[in-house]
Length: 146
Image 1 (cartoon, one colour):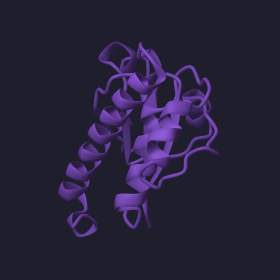
Image 2: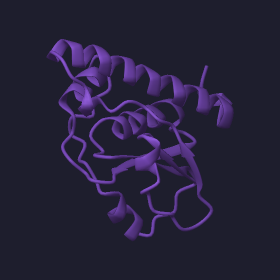
Image 3: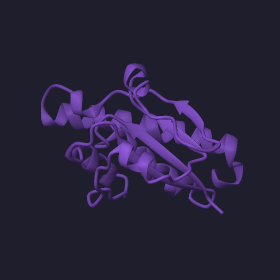
Image 4: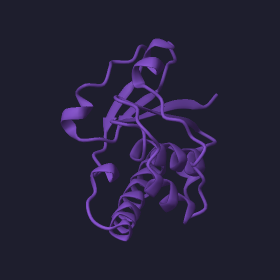
């Protein structure tokens, strides 16, 4: 049975959505990733575009509230926050044997500048998230990364 992983950020619009997609792609035989937000907002269109550039379509994803996931009673082997430290402290404690991890990434929704500037910076964030997922998968499910 696959271990369930929940990625959490503020709006569930970019970072957690990208992390969910990467984990399902890279280590999907071991993990089933989901994502949610503390204050769910809209899917970040720049993040959608950055992911489409590398062949991953998250355009149909919906944002979800972490407290709705919490209330559902689902058990996760790992809950990984991908927002800043202060926001991560607001996350609920999930039931069961859950390992909490914190990976801080910049928020694409806070980026300033032209559309091209935002896209370029979002690509950098996307690549940082992918590299972190690859590194983590190499540690916890070495057969999946190669």
